[in-house]
Length: 289
Image 1 (tube, rainbow, N blue to C red):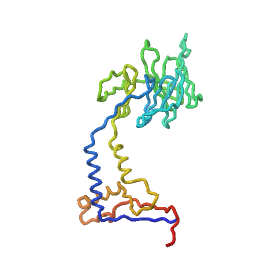
Image 2 (cartoon, rainbow, N blue to C red):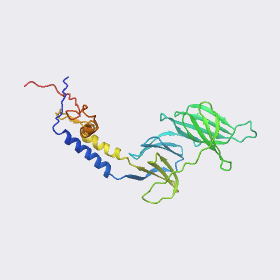
Image 3 (cartoon, rainbow, N blue to C red):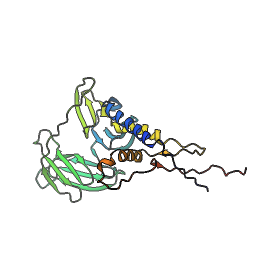
């Protein structure tokens, strides 16, 4: 197999780097902050909202656990749960559930709450019993945070160690979420936020909306990927593809190295345009002339 390595010319390296940097700065400085706000279809009054990452949200609606992608605005059903099961997410992204039951007791020696922790396949992982009447409000593979289940009882919060089952009362301050600036006024019932960039808003009618601030870097990144890394042609060409990061480094080094380098010290400036050397593999064997 014949491998051909091709070097690029250096006659316009500084001009090309300057134009690339100027284009980058102009986009970053002139692009306004873009906000996105839309209605999530077919999701009404979810019992739980869990942010998985920057692109995916978990909605728990009745017996369905739905994974929703905010880019494609599509969802898929990944699990079914019982009405008395709480859903949590482990650090590896796996789903876990906590089934809870409450009992009427006659003495302090009895338990009023039963927790059954299960994996995504419904296999029992751990069973725990508590005197207090509590329900889970957060869980992962390490802990469960629970709250007093009955509204007429004094509200307390508890942290339960998943491995030992040890329970201790904690103080859990109420998180204040600032309302984002929406284009139209809605009556908000609940609001969830992730890193002050993505918001899930439920109005008084149960409608669910997504509001997010789009990352400018993520917006222009696909443009530069397509510009400097086009889809290779079936026919080999003799044009080397410039590497954007190396080109910018070369430009900055060439512009500012004389000011930052020690007096009479060496200045290491590349002699050619920084490129990513392509490897061209002919699709057919060369023919004799």
